[in-house]
Length: 231
Image (cartoon, rainbow, N blue to C red; front, side, top):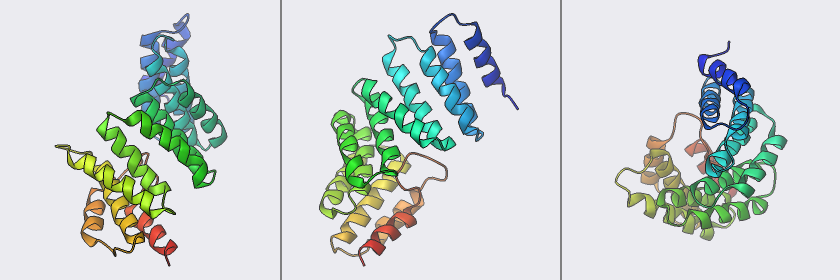
């Protein structure tokens, strides 16, 4: 069943003579709607159309939409195409929040396909661009804490810094706080400091219910991986 946002967006796209901000916005909204209802392939197609419809002078919007298309493609199972599009977005995105998002997504997509050491430089580049944006920095550092699970000193450094940044916020995003707490608990355990049950309990209480962009989507799973690996 074709939903109203998708139908409207496709009509606008057919009528447009070239890049058009209004058409691109409608396509982006339709893509998000398609993803929300589980139509990942349609979402990816619409997001890519949105990127192509975005005027070149709106580079930040254009590359964010390209990154969205890559992420939706991964949802649909086309990981090869997703990584290719994510690499393009990471290369073209302006430095700052959009660049961080593009690099983080590229890192997450390649992490599952390569050794941890291959994905790490991408996240480190994202961390550089996140400087000056506390929530973005906390997000990247919480992810780095996960991919440095074989180097607990590094993991602990990133996890503790992420938690420190979030604790300065009056209302830190629950999902980020959950992952920072998990990172601290996991890395400190690997360093021989035992299980910090209070941190695990807080992380679990804050755990997201739906899909997101974290490296592991379950606190218990992540901690199990770390603890089993230490045996």
